[in-house]
Length: 290
Image 1: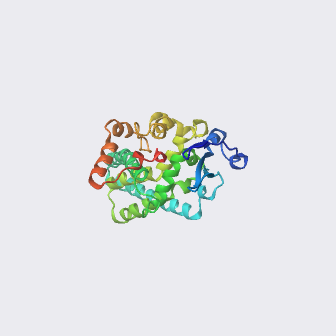
Image 2: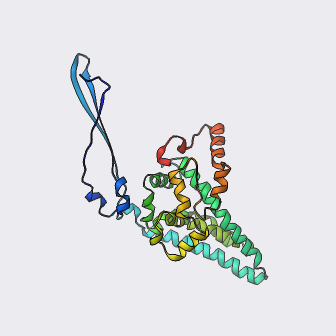
Image 3: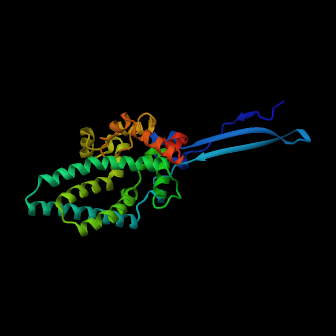
């Protein structure tokens, strides 16, 4: 005789070939996650021997490589083009202004500072969208939703097209940098702004490269990763496998990750926000954020 609370696990078989045709073999084992629970519950109190079969099934599939959500649209490409043009204009002002003013070292140092701080900026933004808000959040809701999907299927970023992956950042760069290009002629300012903006615009591409196998990367990218100039796969894997120990949110070069993790900076920020506003970060309770 079965008790009302008894649960019987079932195993079901599904044909994966229609799903996996366009998916790399190394990623196929995790494509289908099904949870089937069979519980026996009395239908009515007046008929204790009558039992009801309840079947719950959770099926989760990642998008295929030809999914439209992974493809670049004309709008995506136009925004990336606008962002790149804006960054190039800022960089040109730095070079031309530097030669015209006979100052070259200051713009170069400002550019280096922009490169270093862009990595920090990418980490702060990455931490924020991983842990707070949802798809209804104004302006960045779609990025928050995409970030959560990325933690379910990290390898998807390697098949997402470039403009699709970077257009949102390019749009933000266009709106913030263009006014500076029009209003400012200081070569030092543009030395910093152009490098910072360039790194932020392409940080999602650096992120994608950190998920790709070295054998599939351009040799120059591999060389830069090995030198620590770009985020490497070896460093970024901690973000997905050991998230609470190694947060590793920075995705340009990753130079800030050890500093931030060793000093528990993000943990401190999460506690401050929780104490002040009562808002818990997603990583405290949601396994999909890790």
